[in-house]
Length: 246
Image 1 (cartoon, rainbow, N blue to C red):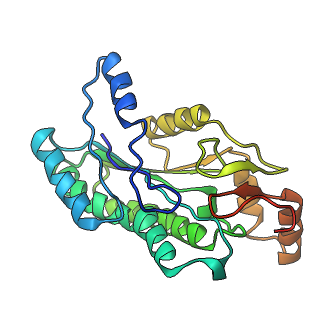
Image 2 (cartoon, one colour; image 1 turned 120 degrees about the vertical axis):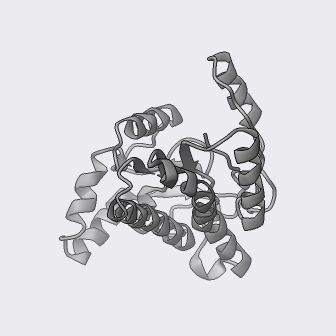
């Protein structure tokens, strides 16, 4: 069970689209589904909703942290409140949701915490300083929590972290790269579920990106810069249109 929202690109209003539709699809498959709309940038709202979930539904067995916000503008053009919103939603919310549901998992030594991060949690991209930093935080959160649970002997609580390249969800506008594919939501969702079911700790999509991430730790900076130029990453947001010489 998971709950959450995705703020719009300005991070102000809540995105309720698709929540009830998804729940209805689950019900048609014979599952029970409950929906809650929560502003993941507000800690107290998360805590209040978590208590409602535990009271009306019960303990959560699988927590999927998936809310996200992106602005996609040059660092010096970012407003302070936008930077704060990025971190409130993209990483701090992970702390509040996990603190809410982990205690019950700890008592049973059973459960799964899944973190949706990004390849941007392993490498930096232009116009995404705040976003990449928050996703580095999400990857770090996952890795540190994994180590801590193991050290506490809670081997029944599993963790997974999803790190895809661009996905055609509308999160950013018309994304493109020369070296990596733009992924479909169906492919990413299936890979994510398979990773959770098989207790895969790190799920990088497409898998071929692993080779680049490994090599980038050893390659000279001039080579990495050249590869970045060849990659020619392009995307737009509500705040920035795509231009070749932006």
